[in-house]
Length: 126
Length: 384
Image 1: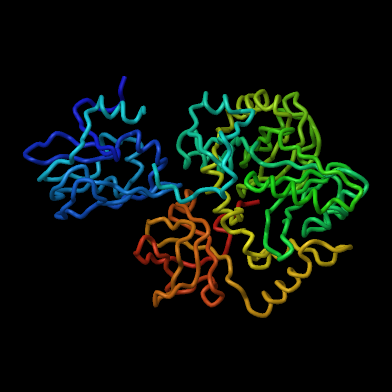
Image 2 (image 1 turned 180 degrees about the horizontal axis):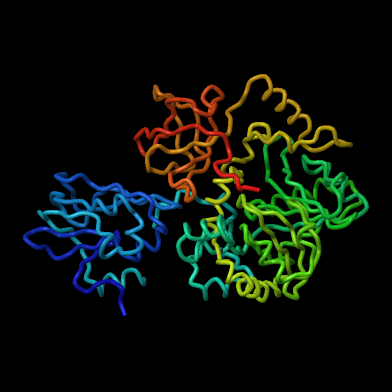
């Protein structure tokens, strides 16, 4: 059974995205990505009000062994960032699909190749 | 993830990575594996920070079977090592171990080593996995004129380490060997959980602990016996990721990072390992004599500790700058420190900026100058 929630969509850069509510989606990274990173110790998120562009870097995640870029899965304006995860980056590891969400974005345009949960399952199994 | 700046020193690409005698055990435990110097090794089993803290407060169990063992035997085994290495190994007492180095004729460090004198005419040289072939080949060439034999024993040993304050208690339950009489940097043959082992009180974590050299066939039963005996004391399997943060906090150098063929032991602040007063000539003597004089006259870049004021993590190769932005050094290792709770790094820094407390030092982290505090090494020292 998939650990990737059915109702989310996924980027090939391992971000997840909720279906928009009033045009706004929540973004995080998948548990697959969090596992690959190891213990996340620092997250740098875009500022509220900033415009992010689908497929482009909008932040970074530092773990013990590496740093990884955070890519925006959609284009739009950032409306909120998760201060809890900034204060306690381990939420990315412990609850990547819930308390470890990263930011909310008012979507102006979606990325070209977002995946369904089943497609993402297949993508990470490949 | 594609970005992993902390690659180990590159080994010649092997067709497929080598697996230790404990490979199936690691996979059964769900370890995240990584290629390290041509070996498929456990990077971590769960949270690397939890593993790190286990070693600092209780105990951790490591598979270090990638390390390269070389045996030197014969009437002139000690003299051959005196010639091949920078240390005075013929003066080492049986049952003792020494941290030493092997240098190129130009004084550059080829590897750092631990040498155990097992018998009067028998030494065990332990090299880093990434350098084991170089060390083996070089020692063999340098020993050619001596009545001594060099044996490649890389496949003869598996190596397990039990590290942490609970390590002595855990091991005592499994052996009759006199562990209380076994001092730091000593080793003795014994039996652990019914398995013949060289029991060494050495490690790379900054904690008390033991390294156990055993036959590969004995590795799995020993691993399981140790985990069972240590369960109540909190012994957990630990991967190479926490080994790196443990050694970094303890200020211990890693070949390929703090130590390379481009630096001499004097450049690394480890000139004390070079024993000029030993009998006979040794490879690198002339160059190292000059390096020692140079270091005394014009202080080279100094290996220092850096502690972050922010939260972004410095990595090997990042530049260190002064208040004006001028480059004054380079990071050799960096990681978030689980013990200190902030990023730390080791860096070679110009002597003028190397004093603990120097103001204005920063690390360039992807284009942003992040303030760092210069401190003396190590970052962490256990209470004794």
